[in-house]
Image 1 (cartoon, rainbow, N blue to C red):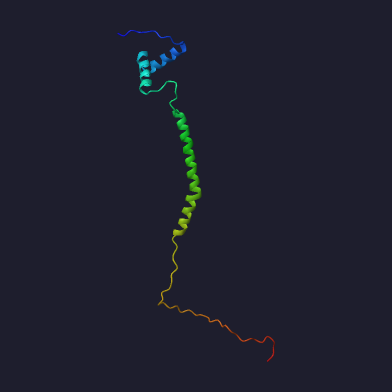
Image 2 (image 1 turned 60 degrees about the vertical axis):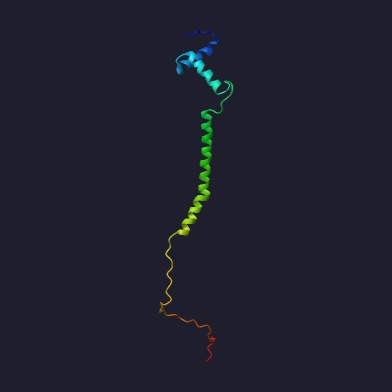
Length: 126
């Protein structure tokens, strides 16, 4: 059996460590050994920040997602919908006008307009 040693901590710090150790580990010794191994293996100091937390990353992502949504809506309003409307108007199915065949003759009465007419006398002279 290993021998124990006494280390002096402030009461508030010791209570925090005991609560942490009880929730995550079987003993206080295992908790301390695991924490020390973590810092030595990852070559980091307990005093340095590891970067943004999950909440700050999530907040930044939500802001960017909202910005992308706004950009897409703007593109839809200014580019996509007008383009689709123009394309639909181009491809709308209209019946083409039927042109008569060259061999086909139309018998319609055509009035020939007279280009030149005599001047009519407006006065009542015979």
